[in-house]
Amino acid sequence: MTVVQGGRILDLPTGRLGNACDVHIDDREVIEIAPVAARTRLERHVTTIDAEGCVVLPGFRNAHAHSAMVLFRGLVEDVSIVEWFNEHIWIVEQNLTPDDVYWGTLLASVEMLRAGVTSVNDHYFAMDRAADAYEASGMRANLAVALFGTAPGAADELRNSVAFAKEVSTRSPLLTGSLGPHSPYICPERFLRDAVEAASRDSLPLHIHVSETHGQVEGSLRTHGATPVAYLDRCGAIGPSTLLAHAYYATNDDLDTIAERGATIAHCPKTFLKFGMVTDVLPRALERSIRVALGSDGAASNNTMSMLEQVRLAALTAKGATGDATAAPVGAVAPLLTAAGTVTGLPAQTTVHVGSPPDVVVLRMDGAHTTPARNMASHLVYSAQERDIEWVVAGGRVVMQQGHHVSLDEREIITRCEAIAERLAVHHSSRPMQTF
Ligand SMILES: [Zn+2]
Image 1 (cartoon, rainbow, N blue to C red):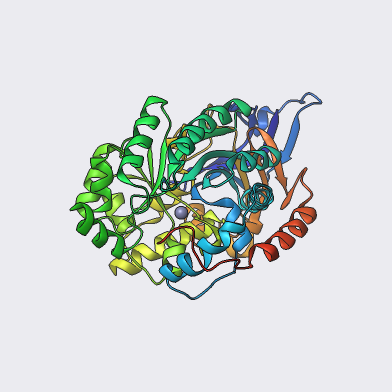
Image 2: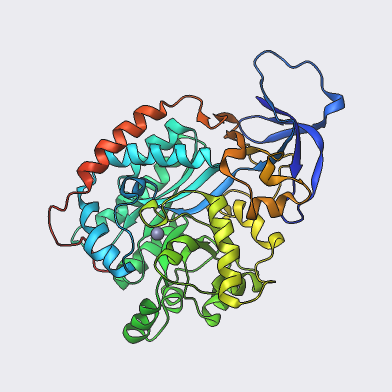
């Protein structure tokens, strides 16, 4: 058991701070919140965290990531999204081994936990090794094997990924699985429909990319006579357990469909800003009460796994794209920090309360850049820094203490990843594994 002592609980939508309290956490949930005055002597096996002068928040949740892509961070900059995929990323990714994915995921986990991110929806390759990394780091993860569905053994790959998604949740209470057909622009229709059928048969969420560029929307209209979202809907792929990565160029009709089906959008604005793309999808989605969550995408395009950075850019992108200062207000965007996860089985959560998941961030609020501490929700969106995060609890266990992982050797992980990244950067062929 862990007790977070003397912090003040923040409610993300309203920015309200509670009185100083003690938060008791076991490995399943927050079990008690007691006033500091009621504090009694604790049993010896209890871990205590001094949270005086700090706010206590739910762990941030990363809705969409390709975690091991941290190994490609900074490899390619200042090119178009088409060049980025076809001439770089889909060439060097062919060098990846399962062991690389393990070390890359471990590095990403350390970075995320450091940034207060206690859960992630990871969509990538060699996910059994990624699962090993999450187990080692103590981070909560939902894993989806990325499936293209174009190779001759596609049916077997789908079967194996269903088996993996079911098996991984038996390894640890912090791990769950999804199916990850890559996107409507890569997966053939037959394969998509098979994946949708498998997901519904085995009650697995679907995690899929959609409408990432204007060109994809036009291409889909030409090929299928429907936008990518409408086409996915026709394939039965959009429902309450569907996580749509990006939907950056979703039309209003698309958003109406997404709202009606109860699907979730993973919004990752930094990747798109870097590729020179700005849209007003966030305010249009919020208007329709669509479940929107924030994602980091891969660090090869996004460079960090930070949700604080993502929430800031989400608010600014919305305001910049609409020319409207009232778009994406603090009370609507701060809760996006913790919005991911409902699609993968975590309850919706915007504050820490009795019965909430045992994932908690303790953040200092008395730094020069967060003074006066009169509106901590606004500070989270616009001024808080990751160095303000003092403690992180995931799955009821303290995993980060003053910026360092409590059990992993960060130096070793960094040294290993440096060596791997150098090997991965070599182009052994000029043929990409797919065409974007
Ligand atoms: Zn992605």
